[in-house]
Image (cartoon, rainbow, N blue to C red):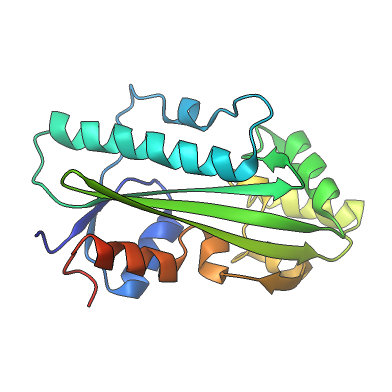
Length: 202
């Protein structure tokens, strides 16, 4: 078994969280001709949990194919996907500042769920986990939302915010996994790596 894992994610936060676990990893990123964003399309009135698990499995399929096409050494492949859900409404990555402001207005003063699915492939075996946390935002003024969006932090973030950044000032309470809200639940990830027999986790 390899002493490292492939991380198929562009998220610098996931890389940092793996480092926190002491897991040696190599990035396995999509090529410029791969439409990675298309994998995140919502199918109709899809439930948030079903959606995030499906997207993660598709990402894993793509990453495994990528490793084979590039002739890279065999090692476990890890993927994850995070979504924010307000009720059954899925809040993905905002396409522009206006959508980011609309998402934050919807989240203001409300409790929402953050769901992160993690999947690991080792040889022919697959392991997956789903982490669900609840985040309660304090009421935010329109001026606060405008200023936060203007900071650029909501770009590329599910639900238009990053809990480890400036958005922390709006978070009244959290129930669940802080690292899961960031994008990679460390407990679940460690368990999956142990299950697949990876020596990166002891």
